Image (cartoon, rainbow, N blue to C red):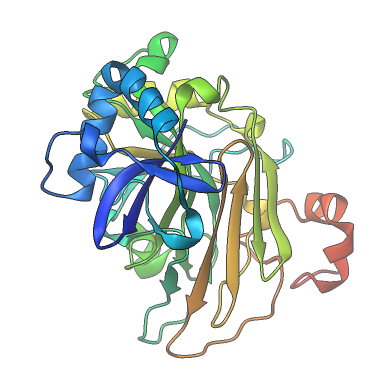
Length: 316
């Protein structure tokens, strides 16, 4: 089942995608104070509500997607945990310990939204990181990796927009604040329930910038797979329904985001979403896959994207 949050006729509610339309299910849920609260109630009550939702879908005529506005399917997650790296990138890396950081939940935007680059000048480059994100069903604490499925409600797409300086450091000497500017956490277009993705480490992830293929990798390349991510995170903290674990990215496809571009993330079995990029300062970088210190394994980029080789920044 593909769960969305959408606005129609001034009402915001959860819904289910049905072909080229959506069926609202807000009337099946307790009255909620916010879209996020409604989504959390759906996650918490989903097992008991599943039959009612199926009957509702059968009885209702879907509203065309062209007549509604899709929002982020997790409007304001309590926590967004991001993995640092977490991909082997064609075995060119040494083994690394699993590590995570917190990304600002208020940075969330949804399908059709706008990524707005900061309007004060620093020597940065702003990069996309296309990632699979795990939507938590909580409360989840000290979950062993053998029991990982009990902590998963579903999966969605996430772009971890990152402000980077020299090398791999982010804004302000390596802090993760550079990943937390407003609009730097696009999520969507939907949550696919866990029963439809039996193995999250068997999905293709792609990202296009104005139609140019940037990220193009498979989640079986994760250094630390989803069960380990859940065990690690819940060892440290309790995760609640609607929290997110973003699984990291393959850095071979990194490239700059800049004013006027349109970026699309697509993950197999989940779907795609597109956002516009606006930069009030109109900064310009050479367009294409970045070949500086933030992008890794340049030979793999040439092998797997030969059509891009002549346009790569810094290529030999």
